[in-house]
Length: 401
Image (tube, rainbow, N blue to C red; front, top):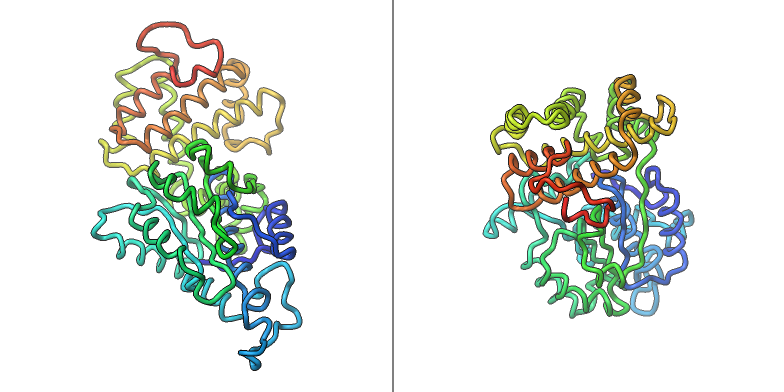
């Protein structure tokens, strides 16, 4: 895990400035909700914010010395007033996720009996791998037993720091009863607890949660920033970094995941699914879907990337239709095909297809056979409809798609 301070957040000047202002002011909201696409730095920012709140040179008793600790060291002269110092004991322990007043919850897969082992292994991988990416190949959720244990602990005062910081990654992966249990603590955590929730799917959170949080929005990362990171930090060659940055769609996590595979081959396989769907050939479409899903054995991350590649293709069609230059296209190596399709596909149809793909992502996360989920969505993407009725004239009828 690469330890990043608030001042070092990649490509997020707005959230960085806002959070540093909060730290400098010393007045914190009950809860914060970090919103934005997957892989743009929300989790990194949440942990950096937590380290700044727990930093001893600014907030802890060691920063002040006093009657009962006269020998406590003072803050370094160059310690920032709006960020973690990075050198105190609290910063070192929070960077390793071992600070007793930092609670970090995240979704996990597997059996409940192996929960402790799974959590420990994930945290160890997060510490050791500077480019660790949370991937959910199987169904993953924040377990009820972990939230119950957390709520019991919140009834007591923090162990060492002035406040306890609770970071919940991908907070949309909870059960309804968990939201109900957490609601009271989020609404009235007291002066000793600060909640930081992150999500890339805010629509899956019950309305009661965002309404009680101060929202911080994260934008997709600029392509040059991702390319520079891959070249300078991840040791990726210039040509490969350009390709990965283009296919990332503003997500550094996606770029880091694709660097270990064959991104162009994956992209072409994903886009090839559109051909039988658009020409109305269900037999060929079914065979293509079974090949992509490996007869149901492909993980959720593979299927999710297939959908995301098609979303990026539709975004390119929309950009090309309104005169975007070649540099603005993700799939710029197929510019001729993009511009040809853009002339034949209107914005309303592009929006309809994007909505179908969004529903496919929802279905993939559910307990549905992958082949059936993709085959059904791609058939609808081509215009097929079981009842044979015309498409709804307005996107508000999205659930009927």
